[in-house]
Image 1 (cartoon, rainbow, N blue to C red):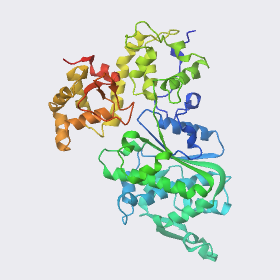
Image 2: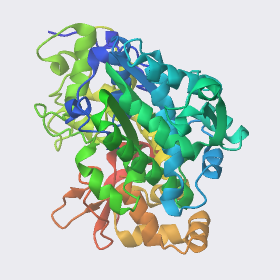
Image 3: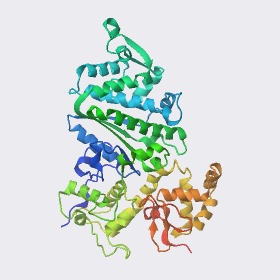
Image 4: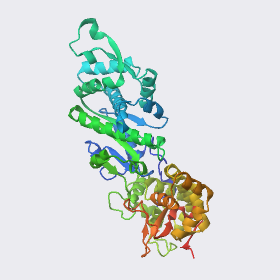
Amino acid sequence: MTHDFRSIDWGSDEAKGDDKLATYFVNPPDYDGIFPGEKRYIIGRKGTGKSAVIQRLKLKADDSALDFYADLSLRAFPLNDLKELGDRGQRDKSKFVPIWHFLIYTELAKLISQDHGALPMADVADLRTFLTLNNLDSDFGFSNTLTLLKRSNSKIKIAAKWIEGEHTTGSDREATVEIHYQKIVKALEDRLRRITSNSTYWIFIDELDEGFRAGDQSFRLLLLALIRAIEDSSIILRSANFMFRPLLVLRSDIFDRLEDNDLNKIDDFVIRLRWTSAADHVENSLKRIIVERIRSSLGNIEDAWESIAYDTDPDLPSVVTSLWQYIASRTYERPRDAIKFMKYCRKQIASGQKITFAQVKSAEDEYSAWLYKELKDEIHSHLPCWKQALDCITRIGTGKFSTADLHDELSRENQVTLWVNSTSRSYNDVMEILFDFGVIGNLDANKRWLFKYKDEDLTWNPKMDVIVHFGLNKKLKLVRKIRS
């Protein structure tokens, strides 16, 4: 039975703010480990669904009277203020751990102050007073806290009893004092630990790539300090009588370039978002995401994909076994890629028809141009001359060629040469970056395609031939053959 492809709602390009996400969300592997706090880091390439996980959790929290959440986003975040508020008496990442602690605990105090079921009332009242005294009792979040802290020269107002003890009596008990924020982190922590509630308090930490620049050592230290603060607070609040759930999402190209011994300790808490187009039945099947979007619009039909696509179209190339395989090979096996391809296909089809290979081919031009632009956000900070490097591939003109061919073209490109010379890198380094981001792969002696997005442990091999990712062929105007 054929269903109407054009009536399918493929959803928003961005998961953030997608109110319909719950109707077609597919749990990635280990997703259930987030709720008991077993998983608190989600790592993956752009478009793999990191923000979708947070959006799904937010929608769930919005439907629950016992879930509260706060956002930490580096979009429009005053990073320079944070750097200035670091502990000058410490070195490396340790300089920034106290300020992250303060920010996390302040947001947690805000959540508790909103929870009418939180006890004891005296400690909840103390937290509310702390927030009010410092003008932190708003919904403006982490950025506002940093701004206010900088304005006050790192000073915070608190009740005198916070530092003088509960035995303080009379007017002294109601007095307030101003001290450096670092000196009250422990007192704030102690009050948080005394709170009892049946609620779950989420801290969602996203859009950390907004402040990322490759080679920025200070940003690397900020991230490592943030991870350290998350781990510290998770351990400290583990014995509290409420559920504290921090969740950090980060692009894999940023996370994998962090170097620190502490990273080994968090491996058990990490979810790596990896999807595969190879099988329909496995938990991380990319096709499951497409099928759920179809079913969300058309109903719980059994053969959802086959009902809207001519999967065994006789016009398919002989090397391709299905229409789905052809489409998936043009993606980086990411949900965003596959969904975007579907949207471009919808433009090509009349109402009531199944999608055919001819229509997929027509949609491929727009999709390839979109995929090219998607690369920019990931690769630009690592290779500013990425566009000129891809222009070199266009000049080669084929989808398969030797490493020597690419090396020669790169060496003739002025912008690439300037970057190589100014950074003391090599043309092989340029090729390795293109390999790391899936622009190119290796082609071994058995004609196997070796792409890093399919296996993150693969490393660039300059002794092998090069193959360009299929999804970029149209944009780069390539033909599929070995260069002679």
